[in-house]
Length: 273
Image (cartoon, rainbow, N blue to C red):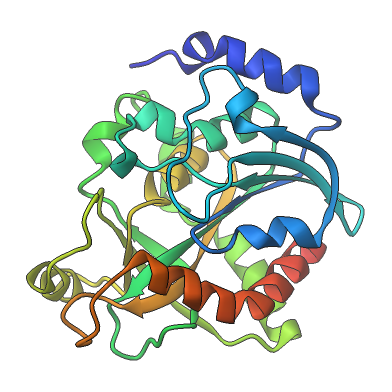
């Protein structure tokens, strides 16, 4: 197993020297959702390119910033941009944002992503609260960053995503009158979109949405005792469910249309935590 504290000692020292406070809640912004960082009070911003050993984000809509921010008298750490395995990075690099949040003693992590809708009742623009992760195709890689779980950690895995945090999110959605789908998120490593045959298989195995992030972050956070939940913005119908060709531009355009309700929901979640 990789000793993350040793490998990323210089990275952690840099962030520790720069941070103005310990965050209560951390937020990782997915594709097309990065503008949320512009809607809150930023106390301190750090360019990820300035952080030693921090991988460069290569995906449109992932700017590459750590923002220490405040909202409703809560201290927040916002990752504007994430690190994907399909960019050529290893698992220990892909979980760096969650690793930083853990080392800064955050209590809650909200993961957001853009995902393809597998459930035929979902439409582009819907928000989905994750109620389960389908992660069989990432578990081997996770052994590089997670030791054999203790009894307490096994209990944490059974509470993944956090039931407590999910209840807070559902309450926030009701208060903001934001319709929230619920379902299982299936992880694929990419770099290509899924084939129609793969989507048909994933549907039969219980997937409601599919994407290329989040699951390894959630497992790393959950095993380490952090309350973690995830919200997907359904940006398109998954392959084979629509005649339209899949593209990252469609992801960005749908995120733009849904950003107002997404921002309202996340702000309310932060207020309720």
